[in-house]
Length: 189
Length: 189
Image (cartoon, each protein chain N blue to C red):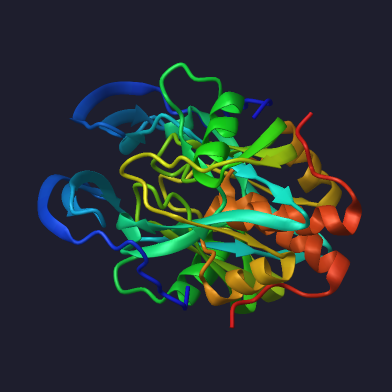
């Protein structure tokens, strides 16, 4: 996200650390509002993630996995958390290969998406993969997932049925459908 | 989201409450993995939210507001948290009117989006508003925002520039663009 505006900025008066986990940190900030009043903001810090829109032979690569917060499984595009210091484009290539076995010759950033801007700083960097070649999947030890390659029609049907239901995957399917209709992606400047 | 599957389910062995805030709750669950090993899951509980895709006279209603987790302002479609026991469709009508002054004769559910399924249970119910009529905005006391009505071209430009950058708004703009190209929304079944 390039153009950073700070309309109605809320300067921090105090930060109270609450929790430092393996993935997230939680803090409560006291802020000053534009009218001079104060308010509290409950904030979740997250390392950020990458996700990959990968279409091979007119089929989208997706993985079904269990999502504990929702107590259900979801069909999603390949994705994963950023490791400390890891460049997002490298993480995208890594996650794609680990989860699906496909290698991309390159990835191009489509959007850096703030998935839950009300309380979390998590950004999901969504890449489009190019030059896909089939290799072998190597999921993490504690990662259980089913890989599928689905047509656009199936992807839209999965959205209607709720089997696809997360923000990055709906965004990716829409971007892909728009690409089939307009011949282009809405890449950032 | 209708079709609930539980592939690779992770039964809870223990739940450790961490934080109970005004908006979010945090807990750490110990779970059993499909291979019998155990793992921990850091979970954020959120009441859920609604968002509204409202197009009046070929322009999308959006609001710019400060997002403390990101330390920047974003241009987003009207949205807000669900109040306890509030039906999502009523919340959508309420938030639309409070933030923009526009009343809709009805709203139709487009998607229930899991915005951050890795750690949060937050679902954003995205509605399409129909029968819009201009009234008067009444934002909450501690809510500071600028209302704008933008063309599809401007919305796509805002995405490219990063002024629009959150999941629900990118999804809404894409859904709107697809509607202009195909004449329909991808409503759930």
